[in-house]
Length: 323
Ligand SMILES: NC(=O)c1ccc[n+]([C@@H]2O[C@H](COP(=O)([O-])OP(=O)(O)OC[C@H]3O[C@@H](n4cnc5c(N)ncnc54)[C@H](OP(=O)(O)O)[C@@H]3O)[C@@H](O)[C@H]2O)c1
Image 1 (spheres, protein in one colour):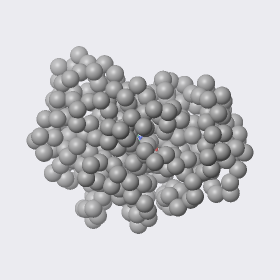
Image 2 (cartoon, helix red, strand yellow):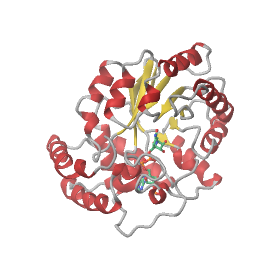
Image 3 (spheres, helix red, strand yellow):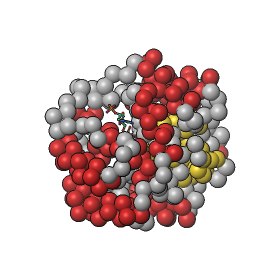
Image 4 (cartoon, protein in one colour):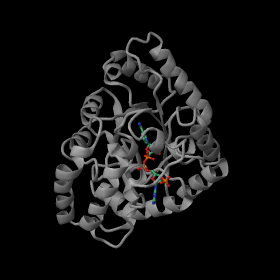
């Protein structure tokens, strides 16, 4: 797989793996299945794995930690979201505690990357947050730090902070805003861009129906209207009803024979400012399919233009939550 620059001193294969699925919130994925997904990703050339302290209360990190003992050359990026109240006097302590737990779970002496995990804007505003990260870096507990954000404005804000090395954003053909300023700015500031939700929680694989029912412990069920966390995350902020109708339109607009999931990934990879895309997977076959997108020819300029017009007119007005 082609590599892209993520950090000053690190390039990674352009398709990584999102490991939220190995923790919780996506139905039941048992340990044996989780290891099969990790193995397949590694065998297909994936070297970057995204996780978080909260995914299954450390389960995702622990599985990856065990896996990394076998394959020490992989890069694992994790996140912390304990500091969510700007008035919390123990915020810094909680952030440091998360790092200690992640070090233990991942079985390493230093984290490759720590990302702030969609912290509210009034927490991102605290200088102490960023100073704590710099201090953790000086102490050698984290190699680098960055932020995962919900909105374009938060992205611009975080990129400006001293020593930030990466930004994780929602970016797919149903969430195109970053292509019109943020990606360019990140490149200018030499900040690596990590793309999450490339398939809009699976919607862009084109297999969902209006009648699809998700299991009780799947966020596409219990967060479908933003009851548990940001409404803009699940299905990229679309209702299942709107999302499936829009996917039918998309199939006609792209009109190529490869699977829609691969074409949706290709749309993202066609943006050269992207460092790495991190699709999640609940099945081994999905991992292989997603990696294949790296070998596809780009979508034509005409298709990109058409998809942008369609996004502005038909998709963007239906996205719930702040973009
Ligand atoms: N706040 C944050 O920082 C944040 C938030 C969300 C995600 N993330 C990270 O980003 C990663 C990716 O985002 P995501 O997992 O939410 O969304 P995603 O990658 O857009 O969707 C993943 C889901 O799509 C389906 N899928 C994947 N590949 C497929 C294929 N080839 N064909 C058919 N279906 C396929 C699978 O679900 P089914 O098989 O069940 O349909 C899979 O669980 C996460 O794993 C996590 O590491 C971070």
